[in-house]
Image 1 (tube, one colour):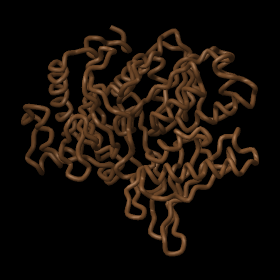
Image 2 (cartoon, rainbow, N blue to C red):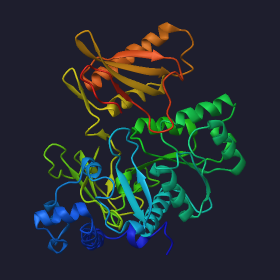
Image 3 (tube, one colour):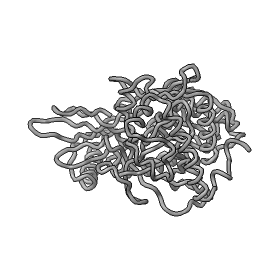
Amino acid sequence: MNSYWQPDIETAAPDTLRAMQLQALRRTLAQAAQSPYYGELFRRLNFSPEQIRTRDDLRRLPFTTKDDLRGHFPYGFLAVPKAETIRLHCSSGTTGNPTVIFHNRHDLDSWANLVARSMYCAGARPDDVFQNICGYGLFTGGLGFQYGAERLGALTIPAGAGNSRRQIKLMQEFGTTVIHAIPSYLPRLREVFTELGLAPAKDTRLRVILSGAEPYTEETRRRLEAMFAPAKVFNSFGLTEMNGPGVAFECDCQNGLHVWEDAYLTEIVNPDTLEPVPDGELGELVFTSLDRQAMPILRYRTRDLTRFLTGPCPCGRTHRRLDRITGRSDDMFIIKGCNVFPMQIEQVLMRIPQAASDYLIVLETLGDNDELILQVEAHPEWFNGDFSKLEHVRQRIVREIHDEVLVTPIVQLVEPGSLPRAEGKAKRVDDRRRNGKTDF
């Protein structure tokens, strides 16, 4: 059997999947007990893996958090001898200990299979030419997709991040058909196509765009697909603590992300009560790894907010589907007494054609009041000196943002390309308030 299309697993009956998960969960708990952190936790709770009779029994254990991982840095969660590990990845945190994840050979092999499965799910095939427009190194998106694409059998171009002119040249020279890039970079790439007098549709063979690492709205997806038509954009979800990319992926139906249940046990809980929520209700994602040996993680709170989608997927895969991530429980900010998620603001902006794709939310204390200042790049076609038209656009943004979040923003339309660009994840919120501390 190949590693990128496994119908006996991907289309397994729900009862078969549950039994598979329970067996894998017992193995994972026994492996986790070998780590200093979980070994001590199990002893303190008088817990043993043999006590697990159903998947729900896992709720007897507490959640694992990012603070737990940082607090036991670097080897507190390692469940195999260090000599058996062959790679680590870690978060890009700039203060304190990063979260570090160790892999042995089995883990990397399993991860490559999951990414290959995910790419095939979205329409990539062994005869494709895959260009990875993503940073390599400690960030998981580079090597994660690299090894997955190789496992799929595609010709791979490890282009790395940035240098848009070279990216386009590579696409043309080698006939790239599939790319992977973060969503905030894609509009810049399209701008460079225009600067060169080129268009993706006539000057490349691009047909599939895999995009993740940052949450983005359905409105953003539609805008990106218009930029790169006829290529389709597929949502990808992953996190370093659960390997990286390949945790959940859209199929060609584009109606939710199939979370690979043979490798992950997924819960969605109320972020305040930490109790499970019914299917279809928004909550916080919690993952337990089921096929990792070097560093299994149990009940990890991701802080990502989503819901389980109900009903079968027309593609025939039976693994449960997640809705796209709507934000994080820890990226919500409160201003003028209102709870606001950055994704709510993006959703509004992507409906306004005169607004380009880059924006920055600045929270700042002006006088005695905290204000939401929204800096939005105007689309180049509209930033032409006709300020009466721009004022009309600015007023529309003010009105529609207020209708969405119940806060009246100070909107500043700025010149195209004037907001800071980053090769990594886009910075969307800059909290400059006297008591502010958030910078995401």
